[in-house]
Image (cartoon, rainbow over all chains, first blue to last red; front, side):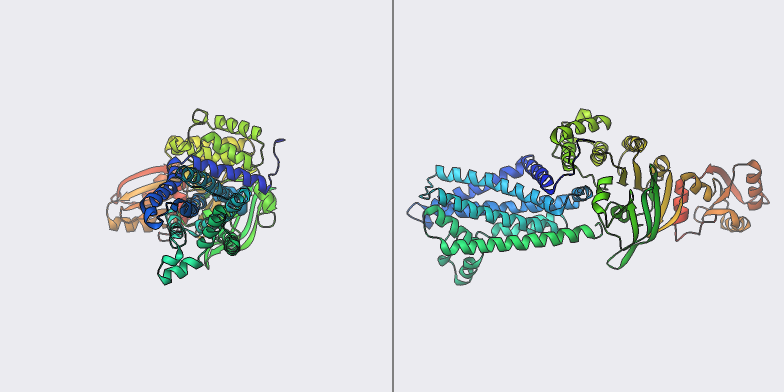
Length: 260
Length: 313
């Protein structure tokens, strides 16, 4: 067969990214929820709680970064479930028998997660702008905010993929990622950490979501962010490194055992 | 050179042995069926051959390449269809095959052409642009098989390819496999259906509790336990016991509950008359008798039934 070349891992990863994106697009119910839920939550916070939380009427400017992270943590279950379904449903067996490696397989799902998050982020920003969000940030500020958010989504998606490899069933994968969706609440996403009881404030101030949100918020509002941004980058690269190693170990372990 | 060559294969999971030293050969262009009850080690064998699991002991070669040391070469020579249908139900048939073709290294144009060709060949062209979720189980199985052979493999490994299919779909899968064999592919197949082994395989190996307990062509295996069997139904327990003792050397099956004996024989009238006389000399023990050809089911039961009487050859 003259058409045949031995495909590189990059080619295989690209094909699998296309597959994962297409699978997302073909399950519109899940996609619509993933896209509209953050918008609904933003409207809820701005119009229901916003007046009480910030009488100046600028709560939308405070809450947008938190809503963007909420999209990411909410979407983590989609990634974990998709990875788990491929692992338990025989797709991983087929891929491995075709010499497609674990990294290419996981990269496909992680890249699809980045694409889904990009879509929901754009939607949230569009609605936010429509209801009065204004940013004094220049191009660099926006790029910086996008970079921090992308790094967070990348780390979280890879972590979710690792959880998908850990779970024995898609239901379990969904359950394992459930707590991630709540991570933005005890943080500075919706209210200032200083307003929380001491024990909760201590947790909120030192969990990864807070520095990420503070960085994005600061960049978008044109405030200094030096300390937060390094903490955020450290958290995200740390989580990414741990997740990449963890998923490699789990992939090897789950594919070496007895077929359950 | 053998398509698949297995010597002394052993594998344990968490200290529990699943394969206890297996020797198997699939000659080039041949079809070997692995037969056995659930838990016998069929799927573990298949997964080792397909490089998805590493053996603990022994050597396994596919197309002359070692499955551990030359894994990439083995994966290029081999295709697998597992027990689960590994296709995406929200994609169309055409998209599924084009995806696999791209992963195999075909360029976009060639991928599309090959997908269309395979859909035609596996009689799926009418449904090509419908989502696979709307397809029947038999069509999905054929698509899974088509995905495995996007690049015609030298060796095809099929793990229970027709489990859960209706008879017509099963026939369609069988004829697809036969065509691949005609085109030069060697096949290792696991099945619980003895008819499937009889229809597709040149050789059969019966696996039980991690060992090969019988092997040969389907005809040889049937001959081994008596090509033809004389079945006797006795009047009562006493008659059953006496008849069994009288023809003990020829008994290949005995069921005390239904008072039936199965005796190995050939289909000559003389041998059947002689056996009837031995089992029932006074003509008062027998309710009825019948003569039938042995099936692979008989082989299966005879060589895998630990609890029952040992089969006599």
